[in-house]
Amino acid sequence: MAEEELLPASVQADRRSIELYMKKVGCILFAAISTRPDVAFAASRLARFNQNPDDRHHMAADRAIQYLYRTRCQGIRLGGTQAVATFLCASDASFADNTVDRKSSQGYVMMLFGGPIAWRASKQATVTTSSTEAELLALSETAKEAIFASRLLKQLQVQIDRPLLIECDNTQTIRLLTEDMARLTTKLRHVDIHQHWLRQECQAGRIQAKWVPTRDMMADGLTKSLPKQKHEAFMKLLRMEDISARIAMERRMDTLKDQLKDARARKSNKAPDQEVKLGFSATIGRK
Image (tube, rainbow, N blue to C red):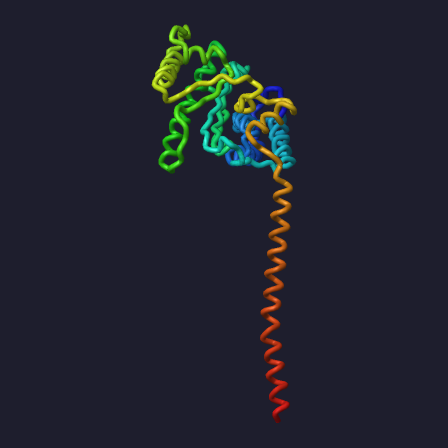
């Protein structure tokens, strides 16, 4: 999807255009939810125009589908690292990037066994007045999802580290949660509530917020469209890689297995025929 922001259509679309657009977005959403976190932001942004798309939205959806086709062999690699059992989360927000309502975009990703197991890209439900407030709201949602995921993993007998580690690239947000004297002065009551809840969880040792530079932020591509080089770096952080060689090898193995199976079947079918011919010849000889 292009880096420029998509805006609402000025003219109401007809039913045929809406149905076609929803089919396109549905295809992108299926990939984004299943195994392609690299298109989660594009799917989230495109889905906002399901009820009234125009040509620009159709073109953006077509580009996303073309990208998915060109990179259809991209897969998520799990395992193969020393920190296999580490449960790690990353939270990020893009402050007031939606020019229509000035709400911020947010995203999170959860890593386990060396690869992403859950991710989400969405728009915040309320307008914030600073990047710190936007990061706090994103971090709060990530923390709640991480706590839920940790309880689910515990029921599945998966041992994870404590406290839950959440990465954030906003230094002021980290200070608010770790320093006793730091406080966020805001008139937004819900933001203040999220701040105090996060401080409570951090002080109780259930959550640990860690600062990372933006270049190492795994959730960066879930909050904005990235240029090519940064997008490729984002995919590397998520341990997404081209598995076309492995797919080709598995196809060759399947072909060899089928050929071997057919050869055994032909061999087993020929054996009874030979026995019948031999038995018939022996009978003639005795006569």
